[in-house]
Image 1 (cartoon, rainbow, N blue to C red):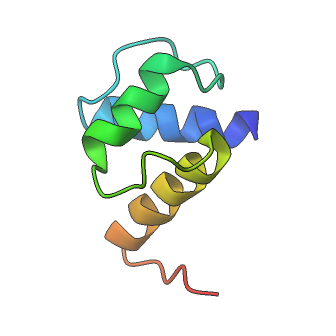
Image 2: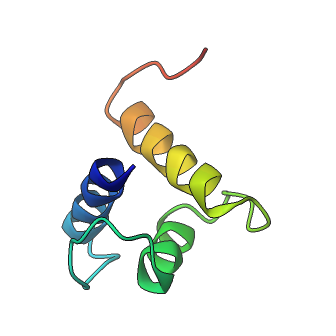
Length: 68
């Protein structure tokens, strides 16, 4: 999961939503950046689910079909 969080932090940084270390740790700044970038992600979801949703939304924005 750490590699996924690093990828997400890098993507969020590219979009100017994250200015902290790209360390793979889903801390408060990472979670805040996810909510800012993707306000439709359910705030009551567990941290892991929010991270997965953000990755899926990034992939879909690049044309990747993420349906299962």
